[in-house]
Structures are given as C-alpha cells and as structure tokens.
Length: 100
Image (cartoon, rainbow, N blue to C red; front, top):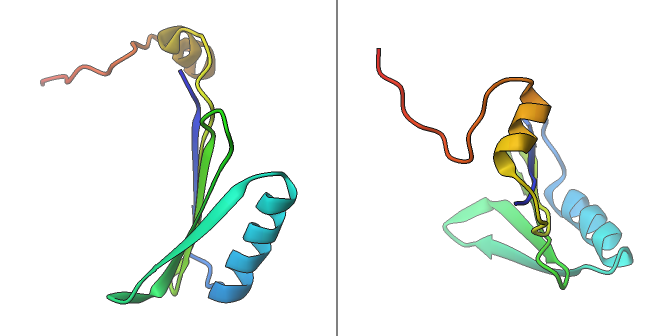
C-alpha cells in the first residue's frame, strides 16, 4: 500500500518563481526533478520529482492556482485496516458501488 496526498489552491501564483522554489527545495532533499510544459497550454508548468524506491511528487502551477500531489513508496500493510484507522468506519481495499 502507499499514501497519496493531494493539495490544491485557487490562489494565483507566479508560475516561474513558484516552480523554481519547489524545484530547489526538492533537489536539496535529494530528489531528481524534471519540468514539463505544453505549448497548447502555456499557462501551465508541471514539475515532477522522484527518488529511488518509488516515491513520486508532482507540483503544478497555472494561471488559476497550484497543486501538489505526493505518492509515497509502497510499504507492507493492510489498506482496509488503514482506512478503518483513518476514518474510524468500515472500509474495504476496493470500494464497491451502492444502489438506492
């Protein structure tokens, strides 16, 4: 199992400055980074970072805000038990649809 964290904000950011700040920080922690842009969407910059072992992070900044997603390395564990602990409710490893 692994943890996924997603954070988004609608606050405007300086695209270049925010990406450079995150890139500098991640590289100082030993991550390898790469930046992607798309000529069809010039208001978007996406920064990726990874480390040996499977941890992956991405940061994006666009004219409407920014976001951060982190996927941790895989660890041994019981996903259902983790959800029960986090949510204090019944959970399963894979959600099942409900009908009304």
